[in-house]
Amino acid sequence: MMDDNTRTAIRSDVGVKIREWRMRRELSQANVARRAGITQASLSNYENGKRDMPLSTLVGVASALEVSLGDLLELPDLIVIRDSLLGRAVEQLRDRIPAGHLAEAAL
Image 1 (tube, one colour):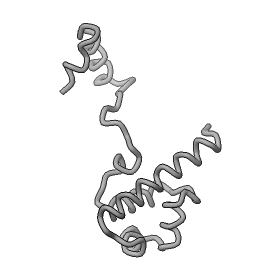
Image 2 (tube, rainbow, N blue to C red):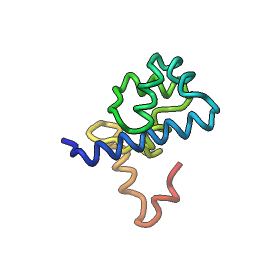
Image 3 (cartoon, rainbow, N blue to C red):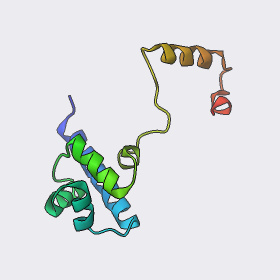
């Protein structure tokens, strides 16, 4: 389970990203909120890290800003796939790459 400090930090980081993207797009809070189907007050609370945002709302805000969830959550470009046939195949290929040369083998 996530502790309160981690939860607060994530909430704040996501809020900052939402505000940054909104400002880059030169959109008002009211405009983004309307597009996302939420109130301007709710968007303000999310941007200021005052409230947890449901995933469905985050998806709506991302759509309103025309960005991906990854843009708002700072997800890494590389997601490790485990416990699947593809994941095992990737691990086998990775194991064949000489130490120190993994970056060179990246697509």
